[in-house]
Image (cartoon, rainbow, N blue to C red; front, side):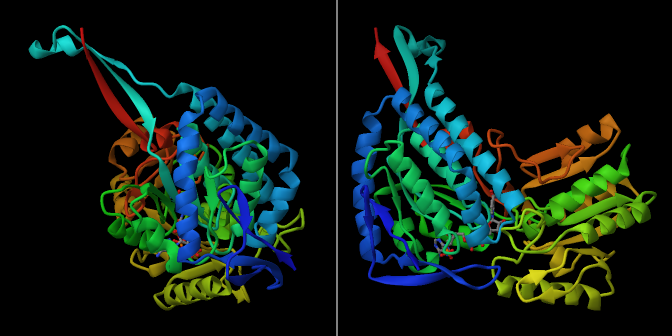
Length: 473
Ligand code: NAP
Protein backbone atom coordinates (compact mmCIF):
# COMPACT_ATOMS: atom_id res chain seq x y z
CA UNK A 1 0.00 0.00 0.00
CA UNK A 2 1.15 3.55 -0.76
CA UNK A 3 2.47 5.02 2.49
CA UNK A 4 2.71 8.82 2.59
CA UNK A 5 4.66 11.23 4.78
CA UNK A 6 4.13 14.87 5.74
CA UNK A 7 6.46 17.67 4.63
CA UNK A 8 7.84 19.59 7.62
CA UNK A 9 10.96 21.76 7.53
CA UNK A 10 11.91 20.43 4.10
CA UNK A 11 11.88 16.78 5.36
CA UNK A 12 9.35 14.03 4.66
CA UNK A 13 8.23 13.00 8.15
CA UNK A 14 6.03 10.21 9.45
CA UNK A 15 3.73 10.45 12.48
CA UNK A 16 2.91 7.97 15.27
CA UNK A 17 -0.64 7.28 14.08
CA UNK A 18 -2.14 6.80 10.60
CA UNK A 19 -5.43 6.42 8.81
CA UNK A 20 -6.47 4.53 5.69
CA UNK A 21 -7.50 6.72 2.78
CA UNK A 22 -10.28 5.04 0.77
CA UNK A 23 -11.68 5.71 -2.69
CA UNK A 24 -15.12 7.32 -2.42
CA UNK A 25 -16.08 5.40 -5.58
CA UNK A 26 -15.29 1.79 -4.68
CA UNK A 27 -14.14 1.91 -1.04
CA UNK A 28 -10.73 0.46 -1.85
CA UNK A 29 -7.81 1.57 0.31
CA UNK A 30 -5.65 4.01 -1.65
CA UNK A 31 -2.98 5.00 0.85
CA UNK A 32 -1.84 5.11 4.46
CA UNK A 33 -1.76 8.72 5.66
CA UNK A 34 -0.10 10.21 8.76
CA UNK A 35 -2.50 11.44 11.43
CA UNK A 36 -0.70 14.51 12.79
CA UNK A 37 -0.74 15.15 16.54
CA UNK A 38 0.06 18.25 18.63
CA UNK A 39 3.78 17.47 18.44
CA UNK A 40 3.68 17.44 14.63
CA UNK A 41 1.85 20.77 14.57
CA UNK A 42 4.45 22.21 16.93
CA UNK A 43 7.24 21.08 14.57
CA UNK A 44 5.40 22.48 11.56
CA UNK A 45 4.92 25.88 13.24
CA UNK A 46 8.55 26.10 14.40
CA UNK A 47 9.68 25.23 10.90
CA UNK A 48 7.29 27.77 9.35
CA UNK A 49 8.78 30.51 11.54
CA UNK A 50 12.19 29.74 10.01
CA UNK A 51 10.60 29.44 6.58
CA UNK A 52 9.04 32.89 6.98
CA UNK A 53 12.49 34.39 7.62
CA UNK A 54 13.84 32.76 4.46
CA UNK A 55 10.85 33.90 2.38
CA UNK A 56 11.25 37.50 3.55
CA UNK A 57 14.77 37.55 2.15
CA UNK A 58 13.74 36.45 -1.35
CA UNK A 59 13.37 39.13 -4.00
CA UNK A 60 10.03 39.41 -5.78
CA UNK A 61 11.76 38.08 -8.88
CA UNK A 62 12.84 34.95 -6.98
CA UNK A 63 9.37 34.38 -5.51
CA UNK A 64 7.85 34.80 -8.95
CA UNK A 65 10.33 32.32 -10.49
CA UNK A 66 9.42 29.61 -7.93
CA UNK A 67 5.71 30.04 -8.67
CA UNK A 68 6.35 30.01 -12.43
CA UNK A 69 8.36 26.80 -12.05
CA UNK A 70 5.53 25.17 -10.06
CA UNK A 71 3.07 26.06 -12.83
CA UNK A 72 5.43 24.40 -15.31
CA UNK A 73 5.78 21.25 -13.15
CA UNK A 74 1.97 20.98 -12.91
CA UNK A 75 1.81 21.25 -16.69
CA UNK A 76 4.31 18.40 -17.06
CA UNK A 77 2.44 16.18 -14.58
CA UNK A 78 -1.11 17.20 -15.41
CA UNK A 79 -2.36 13.66 -16.14
CA UNK A 80 -0.81 12.27 -12.95
CA UNK A 81 -2.45 15.05 -10.91
CA UNK A 82 -5.84 14.51 -12.58
CA UNK A 83 -5.60 10.81 -11.68
CA UNK A 84 -4.98 11.76 -8.02
CA UNK A 85 -8.26 13.73 -8.06
CA UNK A 86 -10.15 10.80 -9.57
CA UNK A 87 -8.65 8.52 -6.94
CA UNK A 88 -9.07 10.44 -3.70
CA UNK A 89 -12.11 12.64 -4.51
CA UNK A 90 -13.93 10.53 -7.15
CA UNK A 91 -13.71 13.57 -9.42
CA UNK A 92 -14.43 12.42 -12.99
CA UNK A 93 -11.38 12.86 -15.23
CA UNK A 94 -13.09 15.50 -17.40
CA UNK A 95 -13.59 17.73 -14.33
CA UNK A 96 -10.22 16.72 -12.85
CA UNK A 97 -8.35 17.84 -15.98
CA UNK A 98 -10.22 21.14 -15.93
CA UNK A 99 -9.18 21.65 -12.30
CA UNK A 100 -5.51 21.04 -13.12
CA UNK A 101 -5.70 23.53 -16.00
CA UNK A 102 -7.08 26.11 -13.55
CA UNK A 103 -4.44 25.25 -10.96
CA UNK A 104 -1.72 26.03 -13.51
CA UNK A 105 -3.40 29.37 -14.28
CA UNK A 106 -3.70 30.19 -10.59
CA UNK A 107 0.03 29.68 -10.01
CA UNK A 108 0.80 31.70 -13.15
CA UNK A 109 -1.35 34.59 -11.87
CA UNK A 110 0.51 34.34 -8.55
CA UNK A 111 3.88 34.43 -10.34
CA UNK A 112 2.78 37.58 -12.19
CA UNK A 113 1.31 39.29 -9.13
CA UNK A 114 4.49 38.61 -7.11
CA UNK A 115 6.13 41.29 -9.27
CA UNK A 116 3.36 43.84 -8.76
CA UNK A 117 3.19 44.23 -4.97
CA UNK A 118 3.70 47.92 -4.31
CA UNK A 119 2.50 50.82 -2.23
CA UNK A 120 1.73 54.45 -3.09
CA UNK A 121 2.98 57.89 -2.22
CA UNK A 122 0.81 59.92 0.15
CA UNK A 123 0.66 63.72 -0.30
CA UNK A 124 1.22 64.47 3.40
CA UNK A 125 1.20 68.24 2.81
CA UNK A 126 -2.55 67.96 2.19
CA UNK A 127 -2.75 68.33 5.97
CA UNK A 128 -1.43 71.60 7.52
CA UNK A 129 0.83 69.69 9.90
CA UNK A 130 2.07 67.42 7.10
CA UNK A 131 4.00 70.11 5.21
CA UNK A 132 7.68 69.33 4.66
CA UNK A 133 7.19 65.57 4.82
CA UNK A 134 7.26 62.77 2.26
CA UNK A 135 4.99 59.77 2.86
CA UNK A 136 4.56 56.41 1.22
CA UNK A 137 3.23 52.89 1.87
CA UNK A 138 4.73 49.47 1.29
CA UNK A 139 3.40 45.95 1.68
CA UNK A 140 5.17 43.47 3.96
CA UNK A 141 4.61 39.74 4.48
CA UNK A 142 2.62 38.71 7.57
CA UNK A 143 4.89 35.77 8.48
CA UNK A 144 3.25 32.40 9.18
CA UNK A 145 -0.15 31.69 7.62
CA UNK A 146 -2.29 28.66 8.48
CA UNK A 147 -4.26 27.37 5.49
CA UNK A 148 -7.12 24.91 5.96
CA UNK A 149 -8.70 23.56 2.78
CA UNK A 150 -11.72 21.47 1.69
CA UNK A 151 -12.01 18.31 -0.40
CA UNK A 152 -13.79 19.62 -3.48
CA UNK A 153 -11.00 21.43 -5.41
CA UNK A 154 -7.99 20.07 -3.58
CA UNK A 155 -5.38 21.30 -6.05
CA UNK A 156 -6.86 24.64 -7.07
CA UNK A 157 -8.10 25.77 -3.67
CA UNK A 158 -4.71 24.92 -2.17
CA UNK A 159 -3.23 27.01 -5.01
CA UNK A 160 -5.47 29.91 -3.92
CA UNK A 161 -3.75 29.78 -0.50
CA UNK A 162 -0.15 28.98 -1.46
CA UNK A 163 0.11 31.12 -4.61
CA UNK A 164 -0.68 34.49 -3.00
CA UNK A 165 0.96 33.58 0.33
CA UNK A 166 4.30 32.86 -1.34
CA UNK A 167 3.94 35.74 -3.81
CA UNK A 168 3.69 38.05 -0.78
CA UNK A 169 6.67 36.40 0.96
CA UNK A 170 4.94 34.37 3.70
CA UNK A 171 5.39 30.80 4.99
CA UNK A 172 2.46 28.39 5.28
CA UNK A 173 1.30 25.48 7.41
CA UNK A 174 -1.28 23.69 5.25
CA UNK A 175 -3.92 21.32 6.63
CA UNK A 176 -5.76 19.73 3.69
CA UNK A 177 -9.08 17.89 4.03
CA UNK A 178 -8.68 14.34 5.41
CA UNK A 179 -10.20 12.89 2.24
CA UNK A 180 -7.80 14.71 -0.12
CA UNK A 181 -4.27 14.69 1.32
CA UNK A 182 -2.58 13.22 -1.78
CA UNK A 183 -3.12 16.35 -3.87
CA UNK A 184 -1.66 18.55 -1.10
CA UNK A 185 1.37 16.27 -0.70
CA UNK A 186 1.89 16.25 -4.47
CA UNK A 187 1.75 20.06 -4.44
CA UNK A 188 4.36 20.09 -1.66
CA UNK A 189 6.61 17.83 -3.71
CA UNK A 190 6.36 20.15 -6.71
CA UNK A 191 7.20 23.22 -4.59
CA UNK A 192 10.23 21.39 -3.17
CA UNK A 193 11.36 20.60 -6.73
CA UNK A 194 10.78 24.23 -7.71
CA UNK A 195 13.24 25.39 -5.04
CA UNK A 196 10.94 26.82 -2.36
CA UNK A 197 13.06 27.36 0.79
CA UNK A 198 12.76 24.57 3.40
CA UNK A 199 10.12 25.42 6.00
CA UNK A 200 8.21 27.82 3.75
CA UNK A 201 5.60 25.11 3.15
CA UNK A 202 4.67 22.56 5.79
CA UNK A 203 1.86 20.10 5.17
CA UNK A 204 0.22 18.39 8.14
CA UNK A 205 -2.33 15.68 7.40
CA UNK A 206 -5.01 14.41 9.76
CA UNK A 207 -8.30 15.28 11.34
CA UNK A 208 -9.36 18.93 11.40
CA UNK A 209 -11.51 18.43 14.47
CA UNK A 210 -8.47 16.98 16.35
CA UNK A 211 -5.71 19.37 15.33
CA UNK A 212 -7.56 22.38 13.97
CA UNK A 213 -7.82 24.26 17.26
CA UNK A 214 -4.08 23.89 18.02
CA UNK A 215 -3.21 25.40 14.67
CA UNK A 216 -5.81 28.16 14.82
CA UNK A 217 -4.98 29.29 18.36
CA UNK A 218 -1.16 29.35 18.14
CA UNK A 219 0.33 32.83 18.55
CA UNK A 220 2.94 32.25 15.82
CA UNK A 221 0.14 32.09 13.24
CA UNK A 222 -0.60 35.60 11.98
CA UNK A 223 -3.46 34.73 9.65
CA UNK A 224 -5.86 31.87 9.02
CA UNK A 225 -7.14 31.35 5.51
CA UNK A 226 -9.97 28.85 5.49
CA UNK A 227 -12.16 27.38 2.77
CA UNK A 228 -14.89 24.99 3.88
CA UNK A 229 -18.26 24.79 5.57
CA UNK A 230 -19.94 27.65 7.44
CA UNK A 231 -20.06 25.53 10.58
CA UNK A 232 -16.28 25.02 10.76
CA UNK A 233 -15.66 28.59 9.57
CA UNK A 234 -17.67 30.00 12.46
CA UNK A 235 -15.72 27.88 14.94
CA UNK A 236 -12.39 29.01 13.47
CA UNK A 237 -13.38 32.66 13.75
CA UNK A 238 -14.33 32.19 17.40
CA UNK A 239 -10.99 30.50 18.16
CA UNK A 240 -8.80 32.91 16.18
CA UNK A 241 -8.73 35.84 18.63
CA UNK A 242 -7.19 38.90 16.99
CA UNK A 243 -5.60 37.03 14.09
CA UNK A 244 -6.52 37.99 10.57
CA UNK A 245 -9.07 35.51 9.16
CA UNK A 246 -10.48 34.95 5.70
CA UNK A 247 -13.37 32.53 5.35
CA UNK A 248 -14.55 31.15 2.00
CA UNK A 249 -17.70 29.27 2.96
CA UNK A 250 -20.74 27.59 1.46
CA UNK A 251 -23.82 28.70 -0.38
CA UNK A 252 -27.17 27.70 -1.90
CA UNK A 253 -26.57 29.72 -5.06
CA UNK A 254 -29.49 30.84 -7.16
CA UNK A 255 -30.10 31.82 -10.76
CA UNK A 256 -32.96 33.91 -12.17
CA UNK A 257 -34.12 33.12 -15.71
CA UNK A 258 -36.15 36.14 -16.74
CA UNK A 259 -35.64 36.13 -20.50
CA UNK A 260 -33.22 34.36 -22.81
CA UNK A 261 -32.66 34.13 -26.53
CA UNK A 262 -31.75 30.44 -26.37
CA UNK A 263 -33.50 28.63 -23.50
CA UNK A 264 -31.95 25.31 -24.47
CA UNK A 265 -28.45 26.73 -24.01
CA UNK A 266 -29.50 28.20 -20.64
CA UNK A 267 -30.83 24.81 -19.51
CA UNK A 268 -27.60 23.12 -20.60
CA UNK A 269 -25.55 25.63 -18.58
CA UNK A 270 -27.84 25.19 -15.55
CA UNK A 271 -27.40 21.40 -15.73
CA UNK A 272 -23.64 21.92 -15.84
CA UNK A 273 -23.81 24.25 -12.83
CA UNK A 274 -26.06 21.95 -10.82
CA UNK A 275 -24.45 18.58 -11.52
CA UNK A 276 -20.71 19.17 -12.16
CA UNK A 277 -18.72 17.13 -9.65
CA UNK A 278 -22.11 15.90 -8.37
CA UNK A 279 -22.99 19.39 -7.12
CA UNK A 280 -20.05 19.44 -4.68
CA UNK A 281 -19.08 22.96 -5.70
CA UNK A 282 -19.51 26.01 -3.43
CA UNK A 283 -21.22 27.96 -6.26
CA UNK A 284 -23.20 25.00 -7.56
CA UNK A 285 -26.63 25.98 -8.94
CA UNK A 286 -29.06 24.96 -6.20
CA UNK A 287 -32.11 27.21 -6.71
CA UNK A 288 -33.54 28.29 -10.06
CA UNK A 289 -36.30 30.90 -10.36
CA UNK A 290 -37.88 30.97 -13.82
CA UNK A 291 -40.31 33.54 -15.27
CA UNK A 292 -43.67 31.73 -15.46
CA UNK A 293 -43.99 31.93 -19.26
CA UNK A 294 -40.69 29.99 -19.68
CA UNK A 295 -41.15 27.66 -16.73
CA UNK A 296 -42.62 24.45 -18.24
CA UNK A 297 -40.27 24.42 -21.25
CA UNK A 298 -37.28 25.10 -19.02
CA UNK A 299 -38.06 22.22 -16.62
CA UNK A 300 -38.44 19.88 -19.58
CA UNK A 301 -35.09 20.95 -21.09
CA UNK A 302 -33.26 20.77 -17.75
CA UNK A 303 -34.67 17.34 -16.95
CA UNK A 304 -33.68 16.05 -20.35
CA UNK A 305 -30.09 17.26 -19.75
CA UNK A 306 -29.96 15.69 -16.27
CA UNK A 307 -31.05 12.32 -17.65
CA UNK A 308 -28.24 12.36 -20.23
CA UNK A 309 -25.45 12.44 -17.61
CA UNK A 310 -23.33 9.30 -17.49
CA UNK A 311 -22.65 7.76 -14.09
CA UNK A 312 -19.50 5.71 -13.60
CA UNK A 313 -15.90 5.22 -12.55
CA UNK A 314 -14.18 8.60 -12.14
CA UNK A 315 -11.19 7.25 -14.06
CA UNK A 316 -13.28 6.75 -17.24
CA UNK A 317 -13.20 9.53 -19.84
CA UNK A 318 -16.93 9.12 -20.47
CA UNK A 319 -18.03 9.60 -16.84
CA UNK A 320 -19.94 12.81 -16.01
CA UNK A 321 -20.95 12.01 -12.44
CA UNK A 322 -19.57 9.62 -9.83
CA UNK A 323 -20.01 8.86 -6.14
CA UNK A 324 -20.31 11.63 -3.56
CA UNK A 325 -17.35 12.13 -1.25
CA UNK A 326 -18.89 9.90 1.48
CA UNK A 327 -21.93 7.58 1.50
CA UNK A 328 -23.26 9.54 4.49
CA UNK A 329 -23.55 12.62 2.24
CA UNK A 330 -25.62 10.66 -0.29
CA UNK A 331 -27.80 9.47 2.61
CA UNK A 332 -28.26 13.07 3.80
CA UNK A 333 -29.39 14.12 0.30
CA UNK A 334 -31.79 11.17 0.25
CA UNK A 335 -33.38 12.40 3.51
CA UNK A 336 -33.67 15.99 2.27
CA UNK A 337 -35.28 14.92 -1.03
CA UNK A 338 -37.72 12.67 0.86
CA UNK A 339 -38.64 15.65 3.07
CA UNK A 340 -39.30 17.74 -0.06
CA UNK A 341 -41.47 15.01 -1.62
CA UNK A 342 -43.44 14.71 1.65
CA UNK A 343 -44.04 18.48 1.51
CA UNK A 344 -45.60 18.10 -1.96
CA UNK A 345 -42.60 18.77 -4.25
CA UNK A 346 -42.52 17.04 -7.65
CA UNK A 347 -39.37 15.03 -8.36
CA UNK A 348 -39.06 15.67 -12.09
CA UNK A 349 -36.14 13.27 -12.46
CA UNK A 350 -33.65 11.36 -10.31
CA UNK A 351 -34.37 10.95 -6.61
CA UNK A 352 -32.66 7.60 -6.08
CA UNK A 353 -29.52 6.60 -4.18
CA UNK A 354 -27.25 3.64 -4.74
CA UNK A 355 -24.51 3.45 -2.08
CA UNK A 356 -22.53 6.69 -2.36
CA UNK A 357 -24.10 7.65 -5.70
CA UNK A 358 -27.10 9.94 -5.90
CA UNK A 359 -28.89 10.45 -9.21
CA UNK A 360 -28.93 13.94 -10.76
CA UNK A 361 -32.23 15.24 -9.42
CA UNK A 362 -34.55 18.06 -10.48
CA UNK A 363 -37.15 19.08 -7.89
CA UNK A 364 -40.06 21.33 -8.81
CA UNK A 365 -41.50 23.09 -5.80
CA UNK A 366 -43.40 26.22 -4.78
CA UNK A 367 -42.43 25.72 -1.14
CA UNK A 368 -39.43 27.96 -0.35
CA UNK A 369 -38.69 26.66 3.19
CA UNK A 370 -37.49 23.16 2.32
CA UNK A 371 -34.18 22.06 3.83
CA UNK A 372 -32.97 21.20 0.30
CA UNK A 373 -33.50 24.88 -0.68
CA UNK A 374 -32.44 26.67 2.50
CA UNK A 375 -29.36 24.67 3.54
CA UNK A 376 -26.35 24.08 1.32
CA UNK A 377 -27.18 20.85 -0.59
CA UNK A 378 -23.64 20.10 -1.82
CA UNK A 379 -25.05 17.28 -3.92
CA UNK A 380 -26.55 16.73 -7.40
CA UNK A 381 -29.94 18.29 -6.65
CA UNK A 382 -31.52 21.47 -7.96
CA UNK A 383 -34.85 23.04 -6.98
CA UNK A 384 -36.82 24.93 -9.66
CA UNK A 385 -39.65 27.36 -9.02
CA UNK A 386 -41.47 30.01 -11.08
CA UNK A 387 -42.31 33.66 -10.45
CA UNK A 388 -44.68 36.25 -11.84
CA UNK A 389 -43.00 39.56 -10.89
CA UNK A 390 -39.36 40.54 -11.21
CA UNK A 391 -39.33 41.83 -7.61
CA UNK A 392 -40.49 38.42 -6.42
CA UNK A 393 -37.47 36.80 -8.11
CA UNK A 394 -35.01 39.24 -6.49
CA UNK A 395 -36.57 38.65 -3.05
CA UNK A 396 -36.47 34.88 -3.54
CA UNK A 397 -32.72 34.94 -4.27
CA UNK A 398 -32.07 37.19 -1.27
CA UNK A 399 -34.18 35.02 1.01
CA UNK A 400 -31.14 32.97 2.02
CA UNK A 401 -28.67 32.79 4.88
CA UNK A 402 -25.93 32.65 2.24
CA UNK A 403 -24.67 35.11 -0.38
CA UNK A 404 -21.77 33.90 -2.49
CA UNK A 405 -22.73 34.50 -6.15
CA UNK A 406 -25.98 34.72 -8.13
CA UNK A 407 -26.70 34.37 -11.85
CA UNK A 408 -29.27 36.36 -13.85
CA UNK A 409 -30.40 35.64 -17.40
CA UNK A 410 -32.10 38.66 -18.89
CA UNK A 411 -32.19 40.48 -22.21
CA UNK A 412 -33.16 43.69 -20.39
CA UNK A 413 -30.23 45.94 -19.54
CA UNK A 414 -32.24 47.76 -16.87
CA UNK A 415 -33.15 44.50 -15.11
CA UNK A 416 -29.49 43.45 -15.26
CA UNK A 417 -28.40 46.68 -13.55
CA UNK A 418 -31.26 46.41 -11.06
CA UNK A 419 -30.11 42.87 -10.14
CA UNK A 420 -26.53 44.10 -9.67
CA UNK A 421 -27.79 46.74 -7.22
CA UNK A 422 -30.22 44.60 -5.26
CA UNK A 423 -28.80 41.08 -5.02
CA UNK A 424 -27.13 40.43 -1.65
CA UNK A 425 -24.15 38.40 -2.88
CA UNK A 426 -20.39 38.74 -3.39
CA UNK A 427 -20.63 38.33 -7.18
CA UNK A 428 -23.42 38.91 -9.73
CA UNK A 429 -23.04 36.96 -12.97
CA UNK A 430 -25.20 38.38 -15.76
CA UNK A 431 -26.32 36.04 -18.54
CA UNK A 432 -24.67 33.02 -16.98
CA UNK A 433 -24.97 30.72 -13.97
CA UNK A 434 -23.46 31.62 -10.57
CA UNK A 435 -21.02 28.73 -11.09
CA UNK A 436 -18.57 31.00 -12.87
CA UNK A 437 -15.11 31.59 -11.48
CA UNK A 438 -11.82 32.44 -13.10
CA UNK A 439 -8.92 32.62 -10.74
CA UNK A 440 -7.90 36.27 -10.83
CA UNK A 441 -11.37 37.74 -10.27
CA UNK A 442 -12.33 38.87 -6.75
CA UNK A 443 -14.23 36.02 -5.16
CA UNK A 444 -15.89 35.71 -1.78
CA UNK A 445 -19.31 35.91 -0.21
CA UNK A 446 -21.44 37.92 2.18
CA UNK A 447 -23.72 36.67 5.00
CA UNK A 448 -22.87 33.05 5.96
CA UNK A 449 -20.82 32.63 2.79
CA UNK A 450 -17.78 34.20 4.36
CA UNK A 451 -15.38 37.04 4.98
CA UNK A 452 -12.66 38.50 2.78
CA UNK A 453 -11.83 37.99 -0.86
CA UNK A 454 -9.74 35.56 -2.89
CA UNK A 455 -8.47 35.98 -6.44
CA UNK A 456 -4.70 36.31 -6.40
CA UNK A 457 -4.33 40.11 -6.23
CA UNK A 458 -7.06 40.38 -3.59
CA UNK A 459 -5.63 37.53 -1.49
CA UNK A 460 -2.22 39.22 -1.56
CA UNK A 461 -3.82 42.29 0.00
CA UNK A 462 -5.26 40.10 2.76
CA UNK A 463 -1.95 38.25 3.19
CA UNK A 464 0.28 41.30 3.58
CA UNK A 465 0.55 44.20 6.02
CA UNK A 466 0.37 47.78 4.76
CA UNK A 467 3.21 49.76 6.37
CA UNK A 468 3.22 53.55 6.30
CA UNK A 469 6.48 55.53 6.14
CA UNK A 470 7.00 59.26 6.73
CA UNK A 471 10.23 61.15 6.02
CA UNK A 472 10.64 64.59 7.57
CA UNK A 473 12.53 66.53 4.93
P1 NAP B 1 -15.35 21.17 6.03
O1 NAP B 1 -15.93 19.92 6.56
O2 NAP B 1 -15.71 22.45 6.65
O3 NAP B 1 -13.77 20.96 6.05
C1 NAP B 1 -12.89 21.93 5.55
C2 NAP B 1 -11.55 21.80 6.24
O4 NAP B 1 -11.70 22.15 7.62
C3 NAP B 1 -10.99 20.38 6.22
O5 NAP B 1 -9.59 20.44 6.06
C4 NAP B 1 -11.36 19.88 7.60
O6 NAP B 1 -10.54 18.81 8.05
C5 NAP B 1 -11.11 21.13 8.42
N1 NAP B 1 -11.72 21.12 9.75
C6 NAP B 1 -12.76 20.36 10.21
N2 NAP B 1 -13.01 20.68 11.51
C7 NAP B 1 -12.12 21.63 11.87
C8 NAP B 1 -11.87 22.35 13.08
N3 NAP B 1 -12.59 22.17 14.18
N4 NAP B 1 -10.89 23.28 13.08
C9 NAP B 1 -10.14 23.50 11.98
N5 NAP B 1 -10.32 22.83 10.82
C10 NAP B 1 -11.30 21.92 10.76
O7 NAP B 1 -15.68 21.32 4.45
P2 NAP B 1 -15.58 20.23 3.31
O8 NAP B 1 -16.68 19.25 3.49
O9 NAP B 1 -14.19 19.73 3.13
O10 NAP B 1 -15.87 21.15 2.03
C11 NAP B 1 -17.13 21.51 1.66
C12 NAP B 1 -17.49 22.92 2.11
O11 NAP B 1 -16.54 23.84 1.62
C13 NAP B 1 -18.81 23.37 1.54
O12 NAP B 1 -19.54 24.05 2.54
C14 NAP B 1 -18.41 24.32 0.43
O13 NAP B 1 -19.37 25.26 0.07
C15 NAP B 1 -17.21 24.95 1.02
N6 NAP B 1 -16.39 25.55 -0.04
C16 NAP B 1 -16.34 26.92 -0.17
C17 NAP B 1 -15.59 27.50 -1.18
C18 NAP B 1 -15.49 28.98 -1.34
O14 NAP B 1 -14.55 29.43 -1.98
N7 NAP B 1 -16.41 29.77 -0.82
C19 NAP B 1 -14.90 26.68 -2.08
C20 NAP B 1 -14.98 25.31 -1.92
C21 NAP B 1 -15.72 24.75 -0.89
P3 NAP B 1 -11.10 17.29 7.95
O15 NAP B 1 -11.26 17.01 6.51
O16 NAP B 1 -10.02 16.52 8.59
O17 NAP B 1 -12.39 17.26 8.71
